Amino acid sequence: MRYCKNCGLLTPHDATACPQCGAALPPDPARAAQPAAAAPRYENEAAAKEPPVEALSDWATFGALLLFAVPVVGFIVSLAWSLGFAKNPARRRLAQAYLLRTLVVAFLATLAVLWLGLSTVLTLSVMRGPAF
Image (cartoon, rainbow, N blue to C red; front, top):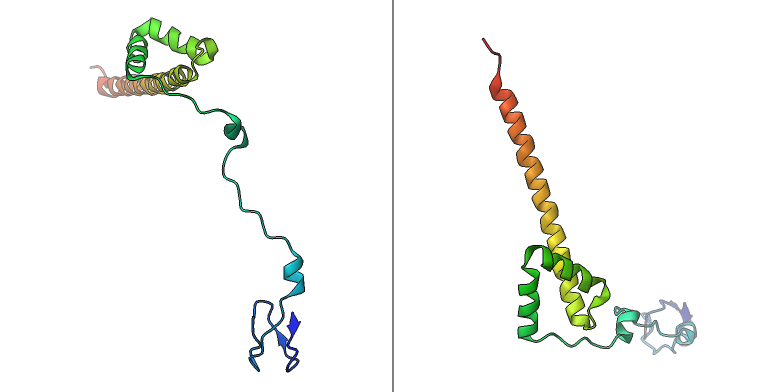
């Protein structure tokens, strides 16, 4: 809180002029001594140090996805490339994305098969009823 030098009124800390007499107030020494707050940083420190990854060409991406489409070989190659056997970081990231998609689809397919199997068993047990 500051005092007006003209009328002696106790003024709010954010006022630039006295509310009673209108005289200009000197700057608040407590606020001037405080350093300005640093702006928040939203970038990742480790990501800022990594050089940008050059993207794969269209044909290289198409070839990798075509290789991933082969059932067993594609899974093995995507697993190997995502674990670091690919020297190209863009190819490694593509393999990681494909492997993650494959695992999510496999999990959802397993849930669907379990749900259908359980609903079939329950339906058959209810429909059987008493035997005469």
